[in-house]
Image (cartoon, rainbow, N blue to C red; front, side):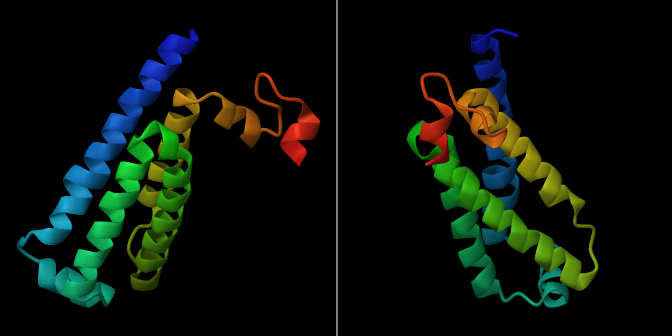
Length: 135
């Protein structure tokens, strides 16, 4: 697969992730919908806290979208998804979706920036020696 095609696929995956994090999940935290109060009560989350969670979710998603901040955005989204997993585990809900979303995100970033895959596998990215990577 060509590098250009990899990057295109990575950006398409990023767009899908952003639609999910911002469009479906982040913005919905500011909207009223049937069953919202019951869901929040079951999870032990106040409406005020849900708004703050929404701000964090949208902020880290935007960081992931910007090429210069994508790596730190990916780290922060991973942390965010860890909190989502813990919340779902605590109340007995299915918890696999945040893991799938996290893997999807890291693959998207790796396709956008192949050096990510090299670093994840302990290999030196193009133009660096393995000694420079291990420092």
